[in-house]
Length: 548
Image (cartoon, rainbow, N blue to C red; front, side):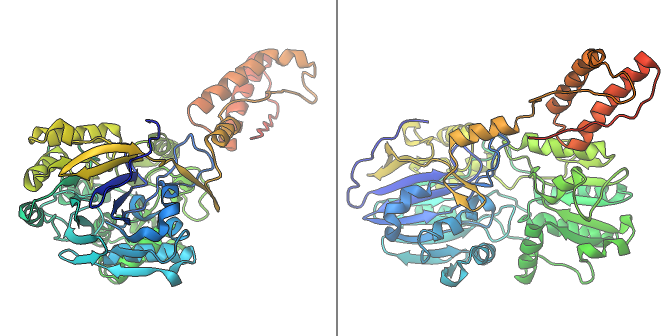
């Protein structure tokens, strides 16, 4: 990451754009727009931690940059209700509680639940908007457009100022047969490009920019989902994002067709789907839903569980099942688990750890890697090319993606005729000024990760994370020590087996085995084989594993 560089004083009627998150990682999306002393913020999401960030619950965007300018913020606009776009809202509102919030009906409903938990609901200032709406505030005029995504009620926003016009797509794709019959408003994008001087800057979703063609329609995965239901002989558990209303609707429809009751597992799943149903975005046939404590009243083949945990989150319902730690739902041989989601980059190890844990229990695990059971919510390269040709922007600033996604998006913009010097591949914290119709990088501010650890915000540093990694590294820090009672009490005879146990534990830890019970089984098996082979005896073996 490049060094900080204080940007120049902002000239009158110059629009400054500062990405405070979302560039370089899939998450914590947030951008500040400033002109004539006023700031508009679009999105405020979170990033979920990697395996090498132990103890961290959430990672926030660069909120610290705004601390000295909180009174200049005229509004926070939310494009849709996914965590990587709304999860940080409570943490921004802790700094100033009366920032006006603009978003669609479902998006604000999901935000409302979060603010209630943070005891910020009473001071929240909601402004519901929908596609086709226009809103003026101070230096900004906003226009909202419908976009199709993996969550209902998503919006793109055009930001019109005296310094230029910006179109932020939010997350979007161009499914022509969407489950909710709500397509991306390309006609509106085209109209925007033909009004006045057109679009000065396009900020387009980059997540699938390196994927050729068009993203598969949601309807195309239904035959594969149908096969999963038809072949599942016992318990069937579907794991997906707690906000993926479209996927849950598909599962509900198939459950009714196959005579299965549906039970939500996971607090966020219950909360979000209840909200979506109350607002009419989720259609649940009467008598379909049951409570978790009712599952014993039905045979295994008459229930489908819809759970959180598709990204391998350690405390999710699915991960607890894989570790045999869930207090109610037990899975085993003959059961089926469907992971109905894409892998978010960085989550691969966590997901495969859960898959391996379920497989060891005899569960059949079906996922995007072995069946056509999921499609992305993001536009692929063909859709992005179409968007650039429709919008005809003067400049492009790819958003929402890792470096490879941003670069691929920039190349697509250039393929449609946009000059390379008007296509900016930026990092979080870069300052881009729109001057005379041309976007220029003019400086850099601090947009570092802000770690949330329980109720602690910002106190976790890279140094403390290093200490935590050492403490939780999967290595043997002492032993093993072997002792005996009534059998081979000379400790020197155990020198050989001590090395074998150490080797076996090291191999198990390297394979991701980290629960005490399975490590004890490893020790018992190695020692048992050695004693039987060497002394033709079968003593009681009591392994003791101490985790530090």
